[in-house]
Length: 438
Image 1 (cartoon, rainbow, N blue to C red):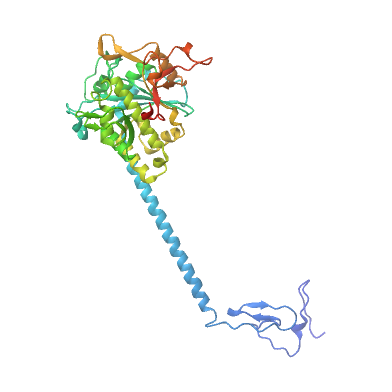
Image 2: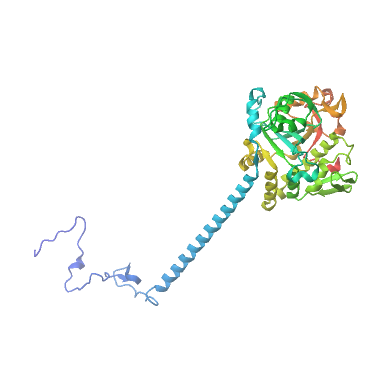
């Protein structure tokens, strides 16, 4: 042998490599392979030389590179534009959230006083059930001065409603408390004012003398129901909410012309704007029999119609209509620290969104004219205590229009009800009631 040649194990030598007289440059493709554009090597098929390769057009593929670069450039700008839109939308959403969240005012003084009297307060009986006290302030200070004289900024609770949300969130019961109801008001304190003595007086004095905390303690003392949260709503906030849902429909049996309430309406079915709605729920002399009882019934009917309107798809599923409602609602509210954020209110509303309108019920605490002053009210017993016990223990409450009950506001005799365990029934209505069909 002329030379010793060592092959890698398992790799046979290429017989063509030793072919005499064959001149092959390092870059030349092996037989049977064609040179691709850009110097790539393509394997041929068979042992013979392959077909002649296509000649690249132009400058050897530069046009293709330019097209690819332009496509990548366009994709980068599209992604950048989409990212910008997302950031802007997120920024706007965050700004709207912060604006709505900032609208809500927090009542820290009431929380502090309630904490001081914690030992006197009732305990919650049913887990997950919630009781929220809604207070309509009749202060004439600030923007509300057009509705009456501002006597140094003092205020009373023009409307007070105890809203009970069932633990399973399948029903909601709103119980109105007459402002002229004679009740036991505990000794109360309010910042900047002297402590008041415990006394037997009309209910709305509690708000004037001791503010929200005194009102809450008065309700808890009367009902034995623990108040979990509270909201105070003012006149202008109520108006704005009605305007935000583009009016609420009511039905009048007779025309109304009440200068004190700034109200002039025709008879029949009609839609009220915010200003008209405020006059409608506050009027006493020109609607019904002029009593506070009749006024509360009218308020409940209107609130039911308002709830029905807000729950409709035309509001909840339409962002352009929902935002004004949220803006008006949050501007109108002063709440306890447990409800003073948009998230807190959203969680509360979300828990109620599946409550059927016929299960959103309104009633007034059983009462009758006070025996010492017919212009005041007193509780009807034992009916009132039975109702308080039902709400306290999260038991069902049924309501029917007053005309279908015997004995006025009193619940009917259980013997008259069908079934082995009849649910006590009270005078009232629900959010599904059509005011024109009553």
